[in-house]
Amino acid sequence: MAPAFYLIPLFAVTIPFLVRAGILGKWRQVYVLKPISTLIVIAAAALSFLQPERSTTYTIGVLVGLALSLAGDVALMFEERRRALLAGLGSFLSAHVAYAVVFGIVGRASWWDALSAAVLLAVGTVVYGRLSPKLDGMRGPVLAYIVAISLMVSRGVSTLPSPALGTGQAVMVTVGAVLFYVSDVILALCRFWRPWRYRRISLAFYYGGQFLIALAASGFG
Image (tube, rainbow, N blue to C red; front, side, top):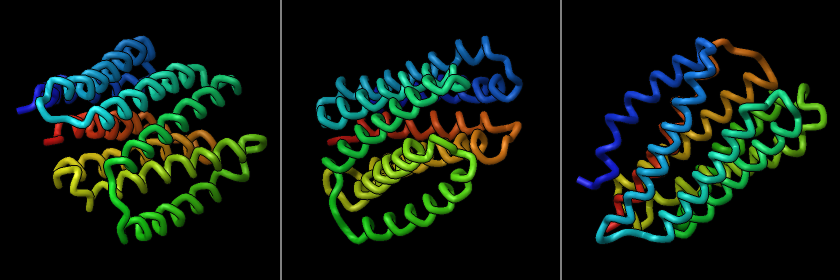
């Protein structure tokens, strides 16, 4: 078994406690558990370098995306400040672009592209329609973000027919991208449309998605 997979039990412990701390508003615990969870994900991706057969391009692309996501996480700790919110959006937008590029490199164009594009266009239109009335001067950045994350998911789906990845590996990439998308939709709707007490459940989707994308790096060969 690839070394990265030995991190799964540790990850399965930290995430429930992180979600619980977020829901209960125990921010000291959040500020401890979040960096630990992020380091586990980064370690999962980096451990793929120990594999005799690997895609250095994929691993480096994922590590770039994780570094940008970490910057976004830090900025969004101060999301009540407009500059911090914009910085967080910019960091995560860049992370989605990094993922989209690397998924595109290892993926392959197919009819899945048309299907995923149609679904993402429909979902994105509905979500933006809900958010738009309360976005004020944030319409442009939020629209750009929706486009970027939709592109990321679409490129993730493009790995399904790719001969460069195994079936299980491609499923991890695709499901990971979708979970990341769901996490961001939950956060956006809770911030700009309707508050939800349990919005921190988005952390489970976020870290679950990131972890699957990172684990996929150990599946080459």
